[in-house]
Amino acid sequence: MTLPPALEVRDDANELDMISHVNEQVATDDEIVTWSLRDPEVFATLYDRHAPAIHRYIARRLGPDLADDLMAETFLLAFRQRARYDTARTDARPWLYGIATNLIGRHRRAEGRFWRAIARSGTDAATESLAERAADRVSAQMSLPALTAALARLSKSQRDVLLLTAEAGLSPVEIADALGVPKGTVHSRLGRARRKMREALGGIDPLDPREDAIDE
Image (cartoon, rainbow, N blue to C red):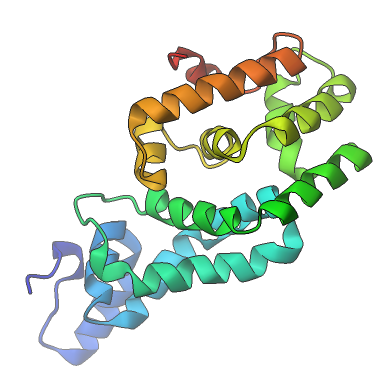
């Protein structure tokens, strides 16, 4: 097997240890996955890079109680499936977010309870970043309860694409890859989700300005 250049093996064992330690930090995700097929411990680099973001995403969907377990399960499944990873994709985030989103889908009742709890309390980290994006156009007091209620009313598929856009920062192409659906389906779901959010926030779109270019 030809090894990725960033993870090239040297003959000297001591030099290999040093070079592996350095190069794992600069290697792309696909190179890490490829190298981990030969040296499974290298996969820990992928965990170190992406675990905090995956944990935060799950916590914002299900709350902190389930986030630890599902984050660990996400990376366990990724490790087991790494031989099927498409190495043409240098960024593993869509792959990891896709696994996490599928796991979240198995906990629909828990997600429903989580959003209802947020609606009762009126605030939670799950809505903070979206609320911050709308803060300059609508007061936090007005936006947070409305935002929470609107998120709770979205279908799971609409919430998936909205939060993968707003929280994970994925593009429509990356979301399509993560969810295994056509890009047109992502645009359609996101368009419907954004319309519902605007209706709830009096015409305010809480997504970043760069997302305003997405065709609905």
